[in-house]
Image (cartoon, rainbow, N blue to C red; front, side, top):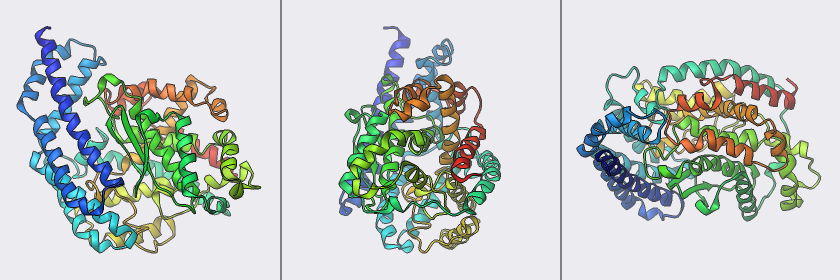
Amino acid sequence: MSTTEQKLQELKTRLLEIGDLNHINALLGWDQSTYMPAGGAEARGRQSALMAQMAQEKFIDKEIGNLLDDLQSYEESLPYDSDDASLIRVTRREYERALKIPPEFIGELNEHAAAAYQAWAEARPANDFAKVRPGLEKTLDLSRKLAEYFPGYEHIADPLIDFADVGMKASSVRTLFASLRDQLVPIVRAITSQPAADNSVLHKHYPEADQLAFGAEVVKQLGYDFNRGRIDKTHHPFMTKFSLGDVRITTRVKEDDFGDCLFSNMHEAGHAMYEQGIDMSYEGMPLGGGTSAGVHESQSRLWENIVGRSHGFWEYMYPSLQAKFPEQLNGVSLSAFYAAINKVEKSLIRTDADEVTYNLHVMLRFDFEVQLLEGSLSIRDLPEAWHERFEHDFGIVPPNDSDGVLQDVHWYAGVIGGSFQGYTLGNILSAQFYNSALKAHPEITNEIAQGKFSTLHGWLRENIYRHGSKFTAPEIVERASGSALTIEPYIDYLKTKYGALYTL
C-alpha cells in the first residue's frame, strides 16, 4: 500500500469512528423522542453532551488536519467528482468549520437541547409557554454565541443558515422569499375567496392501528426499505439515521384526522429514501448524508405532495383505502376525496398546511428567527408577536400558544436560526426535480396511476440520492435539473394543479 493510500485509509478510519459517535448520539435522541421515560431527561442530556463533545474533539484533532494537508496534492490530481477527491474536499470544509467551535460548547449545546426538548414535550400539550421560556432564552443566547464563532458575516443568521444550506445567507433567502411571496399571495387570495372544499371525510373516526398499518404499506410501496428502517410514534415526526443500514422514521396519529399520520409517513419516508439511496461506500463518512436541508426537504415534499396528493396516486390507492375504511369512505367519490386532501385554507398548524399556504408559515418563522437573533424581538414578546403576525398574514388568531409559538419542535431541540428556510427551498426544488424526472421519463405520471414508483425512485436515486454530500446543493441542482434553483416550475405546478381544483 502506498503512503497516499495509507493516509487516506487512516483518514477514513478516523472519520468512521467520529461518524459512529454521532450516530450513537442520534440513537439517544431518537430514544428520547419515542420511548424514553420523562425521568431520564437529565441523564440523557449528559449522555448526549458527552457523545457530541467526544465527536468534536476527535474531529478537530490536529492529525485530521495533517492528513488533509498531506492528501491535498492527491486530491488535486483527481477529477473533481471522484469519490476520493470529494471525500477530502468535503471533510476539509467541515474540518475548517469545526475548528472554530470549542468542543465544550458543543457539549453544552447538546445537553441544553435535550433538556429544552423535554420541557417542550411537556409544555405544548399544557399550553404553557412559561415552562419553556427560560430554556428558549438560553437557546437564543447559545445560538448567537454559535454564530459569533464565525466572524465576518453580513448578518448574524448567516452562519446558522449556512450550516443547513451551504452558501445561503439571510439576504439571499429574503430575496427568494420576497419573489415567491409576490407570486403566492394572489393565488392564496383567489382560492380563499371561494367556498372552501369539504374535507369532513378526513375527520371521521379512523382507528389508530388501521392508520398505522395503511401508512406503513403506502411507504413500503413507494420504496421505503423496512429491512433498513422502521416506524415509531413521537410528538413531532422526524427521520433519523444510525447508519446507511438503519434509517428510521417516526409518525403521529390523530384518530379524527386521517391525513396527519399518512402524509407524515410519506413526508418522512421521502427523507429516509434519500438516505437509504446513498452510495453504501460512503458509510460513516462526511459524504454519507444528504447534501443540504433544502435538497433533503425537496424529497419529503416531492413524495408527500407531488406524488402523494396527486390525482394519479389516488386513482391507484383509493380502492385500497376504501377497503381499509369502508364505513368512513362509503359513498365518498375519488374526486371528493382528492378535493378534501387538497383543501386550501388559512390554518394554524404548519405541518397540516396545504401546499398553497404552507410557505407563508415558513416565511413567518424565518422572519422571527432573524428578529430574535438581531435582538429586535425578545423571547418574552414572542407569543404576542406570533399572534399579531399570524393575524396579519392569515386573518386568524391562534387561540393559544400550543397552536402558535409552541407548535414546532425546532427551536426547542436545537438552535434558533437556519431551522426553517430549507422547507421552502425544498418545496421549490421538489417541482424542479420532478419536472426533470418527467423530461427523462414521461411515463412516470401514468406509472404512478398504476402504483408503479420504481422509475421515479430510480431517477432520484441516480441523480440525487446516491451522491450523498459529494456535491453542494447548487451543484446537485445544476447536475440533476440542468439549471440553478428557480421558482418557475413550482409556481407552474401550483397554478396548474390548483387552477383546475379551484377554477382560477
